[in-house]
Amino acid sequence: MKAISCKLLVIGAGPGGYVCATRAGQRGIDTVIVEAKKPGGTCLNIGCIPSKALIHAADEYHKVAQFAADDSPLGIHASAPRIDLAKTMVWKDEIVGRLNGDVAGLLKHAAVKVVEGWARFRDGKTVEVETETGLQVIHAEQVVIATGSRPVELAALPFGGRVISSTEALALRQVPRRMVVVGAGYIGLELGTAFAKMEAHVTIVEALPRILPQYDTALTRPVEMRLRQLGVDILTGAKATGLTAAGDGLKIETSDGQSKVLAADNILVAVGRTPFTAGWGLEAIDLDLDGPFLRIDERCRTSMRGIYAIGDVTGEPMLAHRASAQGEMVARIIAGEKRSWDSMCIPTICFTDPEIVVAGLLPEAAKATGIDIRIGMSPFQANGRALTLDQDAGFIRVVARADNHLILGIQGVGAGIAELSATFSTAIEMGARLEDITAIIHAHPTQSETMKEAARSALNHSLDPSRQNRLSQIHPQSTQ
Ligand code: FAD
Ligand code: NAD
Image (tube, rainbow, N blue to C red; front, top):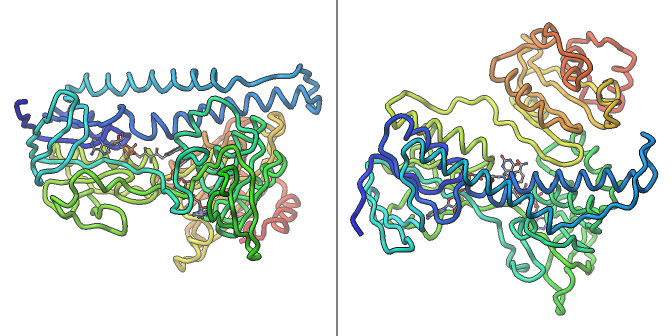
């Protein structure tokens, strides 16, 4: 097969790689992208999109099931609903398929050449790809590594049979009767909640003392309460030690040193993801590492000139929007623009029930900088729109500098709050002060009014100071 020469070669067509290649192609850069599986990477095929589709289907089913159980305060009645998970998966796969086509279309319109197969470095400027029709050699002036990540496998609990990763969980054709989830992070809680809403009996086993340990308890408490309301058993400070001899249960060790067995039809192991750094010839180019990740600088340059790296392979947070933002930046740099990473915040969302959004600094992280801060908080219980949605759990919290009121962080937990994440990060990226937020007219009735109330509370200008006083007793962080 004739060798290809190009200006830019991108390895991996996930949200990092395909955005980088498309942007480069649109700027007239002669670009090739190599993908071993399907366009869209983890996010589109086995991550963000399929998980959110499943979460939505589970929410819809659960809502109707509640109406059928006759405990709806809204006065709605329904007869016994049923979920056909195989059909749900067909719907989910159609969404994925449509988006695969959209990504392929983007690359085509940007005149990016797509090579299907597994890429491996021969040297810093040459990559060979095992394609269906033979070995394709590609010479490139610049290379972007966007190989992503894969699930962490526990030595005591290798994947196979009942032990599954998120990929298999997102392809189940039947709701398991009993599901044990190992790891109370993003995946464990998002998928654990979805399966609980589809009436699996879910038990969550988390090694640390709390669920979602990266967030403070004020943010995670409403999620934990909801999980318990859904009948989910949460075992914190507990470790999975292996399968039973018959393979039908998970052996665990609890925080008080006791051994237990949890019977399970499926054991979803969701204990983190690890960067994809093996099998593509890292040894041939000997790039510097930063722990398990490829080391990059503020321009996503690796330790070898002409080789960039973006996305999950470069470190935390392993999120699709970080990968895409890096990809876009690198395409601009290769096109000759002067660019470097200067984002103030990468918002994170946990699509639990209720959802958690974190943008900028959490109170503890803000305090750790040594700056004096003030914190304002407003509960959804005081928000008309939340009450009309019958979803009043949670709050929005604003963290600001005490001296000039510059907003350092905005976080919240509440139903549908994911859609406010861009408002939170816009305020931070644009250098808003508390007074800027309180001066903006927020449409009524919307959940976004809670953000304005949180900013007011940070300024001690709450519309209802008595509520504020009560709140500060419940959430001590809300006092300045
Ligand atoms: P990836 O998307 O992993 O893409 C890498 C691509 O490179 C893959 O397609 C792979 O096949 C290909 N590849 C690797 N090596 C080679 C090679 N040698 N040759 C050819 N091709 C190769 N993030 C969010 O922001 N929001 C969410 O809601 C969210 N939900 C998630 C839910 C789940 C269940 C999972 C697993 C992840 C979720 N994520 C979410 C994380 C998100 O999917 C990743 O952060 C994102 O996909 C990383 O993008 P990437 O481009 O770095 O890599
Ligand atoms: P995670 O890092 O979010 O959570 C892993 C959890 O497993 C942690 O709480 C950890 O303490 C626990 N754990 C580790 N080893 C354990 C053990 N032996 N026994 C019991 N518990 C153990 O990882 P994840 O949930 O697998 O998700 C991986 C990554 O995927 C996330 O970090 C995130 O970057 C991405 N993701 C993002 C979203 C989103 O943005 N909504 C959704 C899903 C995944």
